[in-house]
Amino acid sequence: MNLLEFTQKFSDEKACEEHLIHLRWKHGFTCPKCSHPEAMLVHAAHRRDADRRVPLFECKQCHRQTSVTAGTIFHKSKTPLFKWFLAIYLVSNDKRGISAKTLQSHIGVSYDTAWNMLNKIRNAMAERNAKYKLEGIVQVDDFFLGGKSKGKRGRGTTQSPMVMGVSLTKGKPQYCFIEAVGDLSKNSILPILQRNLGTDVVLETDGNWSYGASAKELDIPHLVTLSSDEDAHETFQWVDTLISNLKAFIDGTYHGRERFKQLYAAEFTYRLNRRHMGHRLVERLLNTCALAHPINARQTA
View (tube, rainbow, N blue to C red):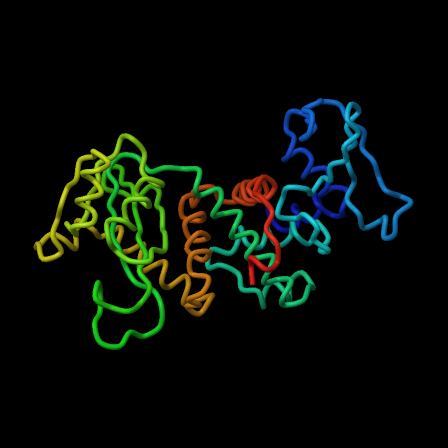
């Protein structure tokens, strides 16, 4: 769907509301309180700013009223839905990532609003990423993000450690995960592998003790190619390439901002794992945002 088609399809609030209803209740509305399947659509015509308020579903059994945006990242937002939808389109179609300053200019909101919108979208991406686990051969390595480090480099540095896993099929990358971590001890590495690896996995690493100990506890096969081995660069070419791409992604658009590196990594992961979707990515991201849990502005600041 190109931009013209998108703006024609979602030209006003009503069109966006109807699509959001479809995304949230694909098989018909169900009351979140009593699970009754029948409801009336209520428009609060008597309330102030009625034309800007999203409609409510009122359950025919318990009479609970549920906002169309309740339980989504759009909840209690003063930004019109059509601007939210346009922001999601722009995020979906800019492979380099879009900055808050650029979004501010494109959709006509304040910088703070654009910043909060983007971080809510990234949180939705992170929530969706967490639903999937990697299978097959999974290469895992650690790396560092942050400003210039004084003294040591690599695993002795004071920079922020992160862990990346990449699943391979016939030597080609399929999917990845990226997580920030406090340190590279087994106590930190093990929960990350538990969250991100499926049951049919062969772990491949450079032999760091934490990975070996974690693999043993998880009872999964563990292949080791030491970083000093001649073929190490070739073996880990894809995980090394994706780490470099992530750093370029963050440094290029977001100028290496340390504080939100996990959210930037979540956006990178979401894009990479759906890189073959093309224009279908916008519909996927709309669905992701419609089903993600709400967060408040303070969580994005």
